Amino acid sequence: MKEMFDVLNENGEFTNKVVSREICHKEGLWHRATVVFIINSNNEVLLQKRSSIKKMWPNLWDITAGGHVLDSEFGYQSVIRETKEELGLDIDLSDLLFIGSTTSSNIKGDINDNHFNEYFIVNKDIDITKLILQEEEVQDIRWFNKEEVIERIHDNYNELTTKTGCWEYLERYLKSIEK
Image 1 (cartoon, rainbow, N blue to C red):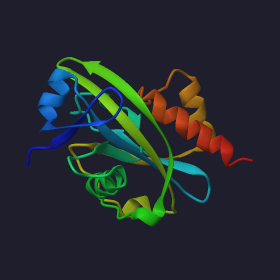
Image 2 (image 1 turned 180 degrees about the horizontal axis):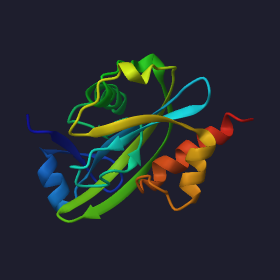
Image 3 (image 1 turned 45 degrees about the vertical axis):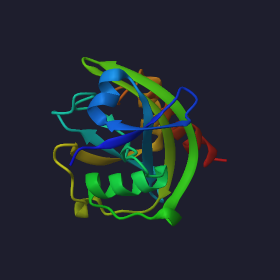
């Protein structure tokens, strides 16, 4: 099934155009993406290690789950769908805490990826041995304590993707729960 995205203008407004992932990335059109971080009762963050076959950021630790928002989909629907696809984990709207949004632009090879990103937190204890990983997306998952995540962010994103906006929001959230 070909993924189709709503095209946005530079202000994040809908243009009433819907195009394929390939066209969005080839032409650098603005579209939406979502991110979720799952945090357990020990304040550990569940991260996924991206598959070695990914075009962007292969073999690096990344968000818990997330991806593109399909046409006519809301961000919360995307993050629920992506979490199920990537980890085999069911979450619902009542699990989600919206913590912010940013824009991002990433270029690698023939991919010109311009996103309006939405960031969510899920506070949930999960037995990761029961998760079913989507092999073409995820090669591993692991709980990281919050200090290690923050240290990696400050160490030039050591073994993490360089999705700066999502890491900055995660760090702010982790520091806010200390208070």
